[in-house]
Structures are given as C-alpha cells and as structure tokens.
Length: 187
Figure 1 (cartoon, one colour):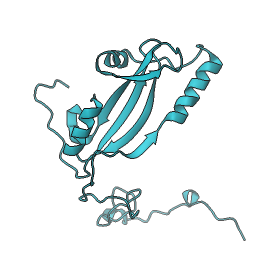
Figure 2 (cartoon, rainbow, N blue to C red; figure 1 turned 45 degrees about the vertical axis):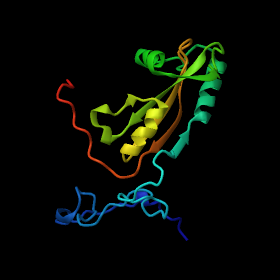
Figure 3 (cartoon, rainbow, N blue to C red; figure 1 turned 120 degrees about the vertical axis):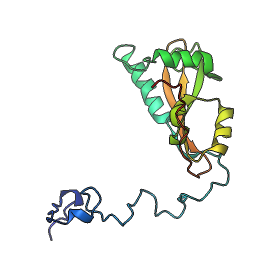
C-alpha cells in the first residue's frame, strides 16, 4: 500500500471559467462563508455573544519560557552578540515615565527593580491602538470595547533588559466600529 500523500503536495488542476464564482481565485464559492480557526469549537464565542466578565483575561500566553531561554543565552554568551539589552530609547523613556514598579529585580544585573508597561492594541481603538495604559485602565477599557489584545513588557532601566512577560485578550466580545481618527492627528 503506497504512503498517503500530504495534502499540501496534491496538485489542483484549475478549470477555465470556474473562477468567476469563486472568492479571489481561492476556489471557495463566494456565497459560502470562509471557516475561521476555532470556529467549530463548542466553547468559541460567536460574534454577537457577549462575554460574561470582560475583565477576565482570555487567550493568555505566558512568555516565561522564552524569557528564561533569553536569560540563559545571555549568561552563556556574556555581553557579546546578545540582543538582551537592546531596548529602544522610546521604550526606556516610556518605562521611566509610565511604568509600574514591581518588586522583582532585573535577572541580568540584579541591581535595579523591573518596571512593567502595559500596551493595548485593538482595531476598535483606531489611532489610539498601541498606547500604554495602566493596569487599572485596562479593566475600564475591557468594559467598553469588544476585543483588546494586551501585552505586558518588563524593562530594566539600569541595564536596558526588556522582555514580554505575558499577552492576553480582554473585552466584552461585542465588536464595535473603530474610533475616528482625530482631525488634528498628522499621520
């Protein structure tokens, strides 16, 4: 019995005249909805289904393993060729003025306490997406928006160590139109 051929290697013959009723040459008919990943899961929320508690994080990704690997790489290689201390000047400035202090010491220099920054991204925020918010502001934003992707980054102001700690989604699950771009915004 021959080995099964992976689906990616199966050649599909295009038939002339058949693309007129398909979605951009993908072979999917236009009137058929495109399946989204996880849409057939029983616990996947529908578009109009509100989340009971929008402040509870969903789709949490903990980056502690990649953080630990970056620390080990730095300690093995020393300071040569390491990207562990490559904080952008804007990130350092944001950490200085908007960061929330923690009680954890920097894993590289062991001298300075780490500062956490919370970035919030969403199409619903429009031009205000990607801004830094305090952890108390995130819960307020979650009450008033459908889907917000939150990233928490730790920064050491002494040696410029920075790494993402966690990322998650909050919001009530009801999509809203993006905010309009302010007329005085010059980009």
